[in-house]
Amino acid sequence: MGNDERAPTPFDCTNQVSTFESRLCCQWELNSMNSKAEKLLSRGRFQKFLMNQEDAGVITELNLELDRIVQAFMLKGAIVTEIAIKETHQTVEQGFARTEAAIQQTKTSLQDAHNELSEHFLLVAASTERAESGVQDMKEETRGGFSRVLSDVGKTEDAVHTTREELSRKLEIVSDNLYRSDSVALNNQSKLLSAAQLQLLRDLPRAQARYDSQSRGDARGCFEGTRKNTLNEIYNWINSQDPNTPPIFWLCGLAGIGKSTIAHTIASEEEEKHRLGASFFFSRDEADRRNPLLVYPSIAYQLAVFNPDLKRLVAEALEQDPDVGLAVMRKQFQKLIAEPLAAWESNRGTVVIVMDALDECYPESGAEEILVRWAAELRRLPVPLKILITSRPELHIRAKFQSPSLRLISQPYILHDIEKSIVQADIELFFRHRLNEIAEDHGIPTPWPTDFELRILVKRADILFIFAATAIKFIAGGKRRDPQARLNILLKREAPKSTSKYQEVDALYTQVLQQAVAQEDEDEDDTETTTQVFRNVLETIVLLRDPLSSGSLEALLCLSKGAVRSAIIHLHSVLVVPEILDVSV
Image 1 (cartoon, rainbow, N blue to C red):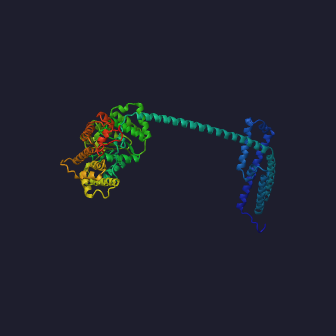
Image 2: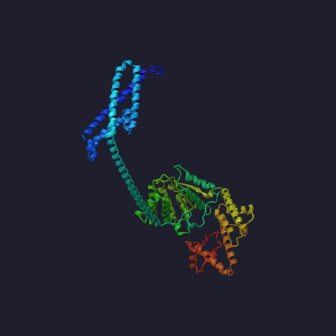
Image 3: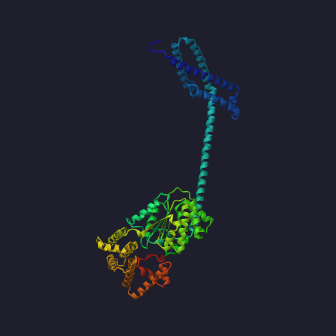
């Protein structure tokens, strides 16, 4: 043994013997498989397979034999695997060359390490030679018939695979077309259903009483920076997650104190947050907006617009009873509000409903019924509703809120009980901003007005925002557009002697009317006729229960076209004077 050759350790020798024996077993098993294949060929089954592929039995038996051979190739040693996989003779020969070299190295190592096993290894070597001879024979056979078997089977498999791919592609096309057809049909059906539901909802009797309805004119929310305490109180109530928080917030206050402005602000803000389910702003001057029978249908319609699921649920209620919108309030509420909300499966958060000026609902029993229905059903509904209700402290409304059923689910907030200094600070802020705008529009040097003049205006407003809003309209109006002259009219007016909370408002309205008449006299040559027309128009507007358009008033009073607008053109601060003849005054 050379110096550079080291005898393997007994552990190495054992590993080499195990590997070599395993390879021999693989060779012998392959020889057995080859023998079976030769028998099949000798019986003519291969030729039958080639001539008649419909012989299922022969195909099955041959496939079983092929599967066993392939499994043997995969599981039994690296040498046999290489022979089965390689498609060219050169690759197979290279594989056997590597195998023969490995065998020779193993035999040499074993002989050097264990001479006593030389006889055993001679037998092993002889067996290896026989195995190599068998493998060589198998190689020759593989080049011939067996390779053709694999080739033909491969071609058959390729054809089947190609056919299967073509069928799969066509099935995908058909399935895709069917899916598109179904989608189009479902989409069309959904559109038809949606249109039918929308028509049912459109037929629902309702009032134009949203917070932003055209019937409310140029109504606005709170001026920025004002009413902070009150707004924060309401927002905290809306955002509260405490289950004990009352679902109704009653904002109570005197006329002209700013309840509707606050309600408008809340409705607008909550709509931007996608939480405003509905709003209803009452008005005693409009038949629809004071009618209690239109309240729940109007709210149901807005809830349906607010959410598609509620739209479907309300529409289903109308499909079952198309005339439910004309039913008594109890049934309206149950079918259009309570049942759809109870069936609404939603994980969304709070839904807000704003109802302003409930005291202007007529008759009074209608306002009472509205409160009774909410009191009876609100706690049972799974949806977290928050209902903001504003009103004057009228007796019939106060009595309901003081009843046990409503007292437990409502949070009262008395607006006129807020500290006077806080309210007047808000009114001063409002005056300063609006008067600055007027000064800019008319090129009046600032600061204007003086602090002393501003304090007089704030004092006369007291806690009533209605005074401040009316005064601003009066100062900014007028045909001659002289704000300073109109401001002076307000400042020079004597303080009223009445002790009423509305004494300043009454005096302001009187001043507005007097100024309007004076301007009419200056504008027209026939003063007596102009004054009489003014009186007739104004008296008719006051006496009418329901407002009429300018055109209707002219027809009623037998006046020429445009006479009504000319008569009330100077009353913008106390009347909504429309630009269009068919819009109510």
